[in-house]
Length: 390
Image (cartoon, rainbow, N blue to C red):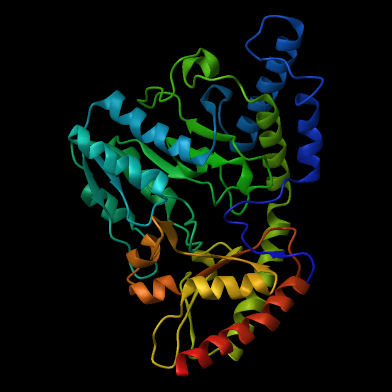
């Protein structure tokens, strides 16, 4: 293969050509600062507000509830820290399966005297609404649980959890970075007080995202130093990013059902073949039931005849040599490969967590690409099995 096959769409996606076309004028002719009073600034401001109106309509929100950020990580940090500041309460409820953009600010809050309650998921990765009900206390500032897990694709019962939080009068935030464009994300249907979205996961540009905060939710701005976003997020407006985000969200929702069916077909072919060709050496880490998992993410771990996990880095590099781009559940920290906190949270041993790979599809992938992966992956696994025997 001269061109690599890209199966790492949960990490980032290519920019849709229509999105790029929408953005280009704001890099050149329409480069004005949206905060400037002159005509070029006013045109940029109009583009920003038109995009805000469009996004609000697509999400079922009010334009005043849409705040533009640099992406999902900032949005997650902003809601956690902003609600703590506004409520002066001292407890965060979340789970060990969350993105580090939630876990790290939650842990950081302990320096200010907060406590973090981690709800333990079942083997399927699901947090039940009853767990949330039992955990909420008088001092709970916020509950934050992601809609779709970024490593396994597992779907949380967000509507039921939101109903409990609403009943208890506690703000509920959900990171919807991996669910937007893959399953319905309407703020009233979900019942959330806040959610996070990132453009580059839906064929939009990097460096732009959304924090939705329902009107009336206790929250104070996180990034200060400017009057942009109605004084809720300081910093020069990223006009080209905002118009690109609006177009990417429009296209993602327009193609949502088509993308689901396409990726479902790819997922089914992948899993059926792997179970036939590598039975006894592969384990599914994503939920088995379709209703509990998005169709575009598959997480698998591989092990030898003794049940010991493969070297995940070598597995990844071998696939890369074959021209296949996937990711593993490990993060490199100070030169040491650590097992995925998500997979460990699901009860996997360290060696199996390290041997896991995530394959994630987009609407631009094809069945021919899946077939190429299915041709090369068994060869890679067999080579690693032979090495483990020697």
